[in-house]
Image 1 (cartoon, one colour):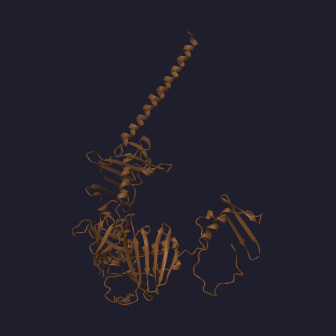
Image 2 (cartoon, one colour):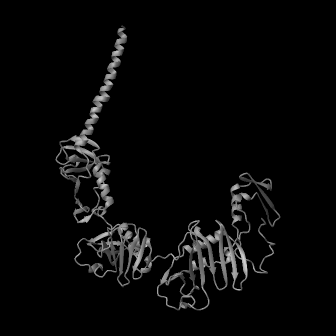
Image 3 (tube, rainbow, N blue to C red):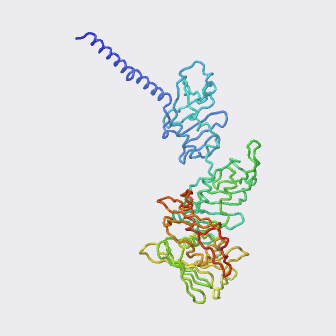
Length: 558
């Protein structure tokens, strides 16, 4: 055997063995030791076993505990903990780990551990408490020195590890005005100070009904919105934790009382009473210029007097109308097959021929008939305008004489505008009919009244909506000057100008080119914009005899 070769193999074996020892034995053992040391030092907190968090510090020390109804403060106040803040606290507790081990030190003063800035104690069910004392910041300002209570070893914690514990009590406590979740509300009762109490009840997930003072359909969004406003808007300040006298806050005679029921019984789950208005001037160094307005409030269940934003109060309903369903008539526009508009002067019958094709049949008062081609865009606009009409008022007791509402007496002449819509929800489904009438517009009241067929109450609409739905047959007809379905149908554009100049453009594939004048380059985007604009040029009104100009001074002939 070759001695040199054997020696070389032996050296290789030694190197490999050394590498194995370093990587798989020594370094791996050291890494395990570090992990074990961390586990022994800070095991992390088992969220399920955590029953108490106690934060000791110079300003605002606090303690929160787990109860059957959730986490609550027991020091310095008796109050619930905000759910979002609690989630962050628990997450921080479970992820609490040392960042760097300093080890045992003789002088703890230089680390600020002789007088810790803060102490966090975690109370665990059936286990010993875990307390972490926190000292000064490290020179890099990214960490703080810390130690487990009654142990000599010092380590570092990242600032973000403890940031959630070092917040004000106000920012951690539950600041919901009312703790009831919107989806759990089944009934809401609102009592304004001057009277006019009203009540809405949930009929299903997305349906609410008004039951007091009248029975009617309620707006689902606005009804549940009362609870949403009180649940998700935040208290701005807690004024008096244990008020003995409510008079200074105007809460002895509430301006508004809201009761929220989650069960069918007569006892509300909770609610709120609103008191006086308070205006606070901005602090000199805040940079704000306008004063801020608040209202005093308190939960029905008791607790502290609080200040809430004026906007929150404005978002709460003050009258029964604010909760009524305001859509006059509802349908799917694509389901409409026919619209009949009748008045004293004419009858307009609009029939759907295809998806985007309508025929207009006009019959005048003297029985003259005419036919127009309907423009689907304008007819669809009319259908959408009718669908989106919202009532601005209701008259539940109108009496027998409707003339004061711009409507003719029941047996009188002068029929108002009458709209009848036929719709078919499915291709082979039954044909349904909806109808309503609209009276003349009352300029002094700035509204027009109407009635749904089969209902006694009257609704009122504003002038803007009245104008939208009282369109003439001419407006609904096909009024475009140039009829072509697609821009690509146009292959040539010519233009003559008053100065005798002339241009001619031809389509060249997906672009355009000048034929005349030859030395000009066409900008395809601009030409396409012109073609698209021409397709929508429409007549607005017909010129009267003698009104038409001679066009000697025309701008262009296209």
